[in-house]
Length: 84
Image (cartoon, rainbow, N blue to C red; front, side, top):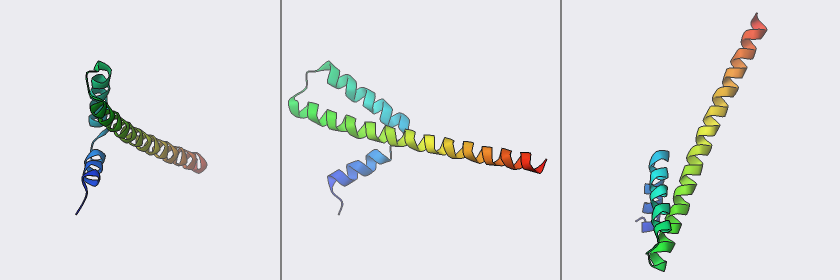
């Protein structure tokens, strides 16, 4: 049986970049607005940290895919030049 933390982490990982970013914006807005208890603020902060990590991983993954595509294109271009 999975724990609540594992289920929450799995759900969080299923978020796309835009969903995580939008939720992060909402978390920041709520924190900046104030009026929360210390426990609520800590929970929001922790959620914000988790969402920021998700966004960073998604961006890093996108960067790696772009770098791989560019490297592949450069390799193909170099091969075309050698054949001419």
